[in-house]
Image 1 (cartoon, rainbow over the protein chains, first blue to last red):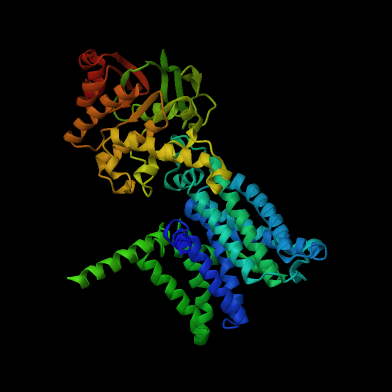
Image 2 (image 1 turned 120 degrees about the vertical axis):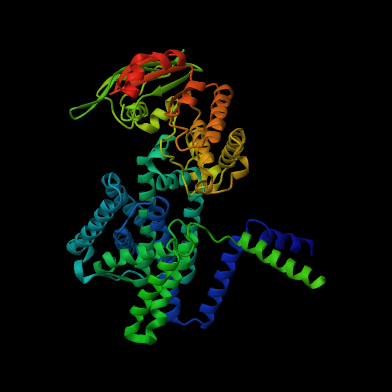
Length: 337
Length: 252
């Protein structure tokens, strides 16, 4: 009994509560999917949401925390997706375990996407604001065109097919949890603080000794690497890749999620990703009106919450718990007198 | 020992000679004022000293090391730190985080440490919080430490900027119009703060200021420039009666 209490304490009472909540969400979704309550269509949608969460939180490093306008994120996703897809096809008979295959491919995707981030970041980060936005946009189109024309490797516009379809809910879920946790921990270190200080005021940041070139590049590379992870997840989910999937529209879709959720808030990106992937699907009943509705929702949110749903705040279950507790104690005290 | 030595400093923007033949030597523990009419080149000199502009000629030595060819963040490491004419705080960060950023280079844990929260991470972060709180205490800002910097009143924002500059552990502090926009009472308070921090942190200060009461009140030595050239040097008394200075400010 004492041991149970102890366990309850470690799981619920202290800092592990966030992990506990995540674990419970996983268990519930896992059971629902396995028992068939959530059908195949919905579970596919959930995996798509998880991929968009990875994409949005990674873009948040560059756009939300570092404060740079970045309109070519889908290109890095594409580089990651194609790398993972090609590795997946080549090694599917060599590596028996699905998980291991995914990990190896994702590692490759992170390296190529990260390297691309380094190549683009070096010249791009001399630019600011709109100019950087246009340059990243241009880079995105270059990547798409290169993928289309590299027929020998990527099979061009016909698309790369035959990638093993190994993306299951548990793999997608835990990959997403790991990515978000890594980004969160990184942002709460001195390196993350340095990156946020660049967003706040570049000149002041330099004047207190921050090497802004280095940290801009680091932020850019990290964002690209995690975009590679998102791309790898996408490749193994779809089993088919076409260059058109990683065009400018995709970049904007990711960008909208970040802005809507709040630039600089990871939980905001998560909520916005859920909303913006579900919304168009649920509005299917309204047929041609759905994009009208979708756009209206965006406009209304931006009018009433220009800083995004969450601003720069994060959801923290420790705070929620103390808030609920204080609410209950108040009710309890009121009841007693 | 001289903390800051400037020899023959000059910069031209095209045909305009913004600063010409500027010499200054600041000893340890000295408080020097840099004054001059609007557009005389005071802030340009600050930007040269901190590496924002690259001088056309001359040399700058901080602690006997030349700053030439160094980036602003590397010059900070040599031991000089500055504030800005228009306050530049990290507005959406807490007061405490504003100071902690200035400790960045005194911490050494890497990416691995930040992800796994190693012992080194915890030790260094805790120490940074402790030192930052002590520093805020000196400036009477301790009670605001969890507020966002943008929510502080104006005078306190100025103080926070000075505190942040001090957090980089400088040998010389460059203050660009610290009393700009302050009311007389806030200026009075600022004068006390500057005197206090000079004593407590054992540093030299070079300040630009238009408020003559502040300059004459606390500076030990004053340098006056006009059109990028030094027109007078000396103690406050000598400057007050110097005919060249009066001419520069009031005309003939």
